[in-house]
Image 1 (cartoon, rainbow, N blue to C red):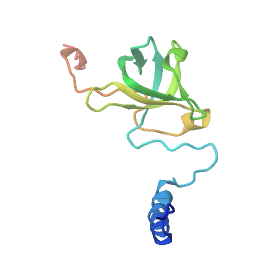
Image 2: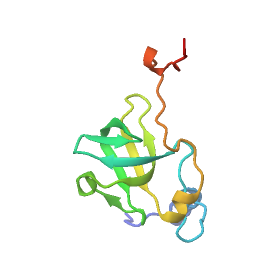
Image 3: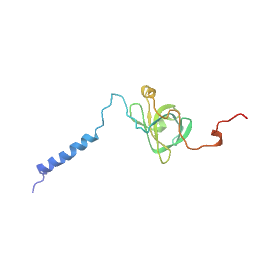
Image 4: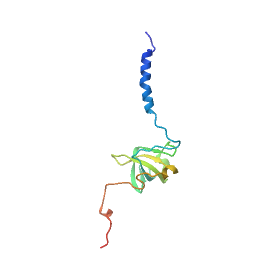
Length: 135
């Protein structure tokens, strides 16, 4: 009885693992540059407490799994950023509208144009949204 796997079994395992390892590698980016998802929008964020924040002057709830990345791409806790105005890229959860992922931007990243600057979009309209006309 042998306790070592046979050579063909090891070769098969290596042949399967190599392509998977190659796929796991991301495309290289220039030093210090982060890739943001297409769905990420730009905004001004101020965390007000452990459950809510002001995003572009509108109140938004923080998702239970909120991830906040600092300019070095390290995770930070929301409570350490309370009442600090931050220029960010962000992603809202589609189903709940809660703030899900936030990237605090460097000065260079903030200069790059991005969709969503200073606008949280909503489909709620009221009569007060209508432009007033003189009579």
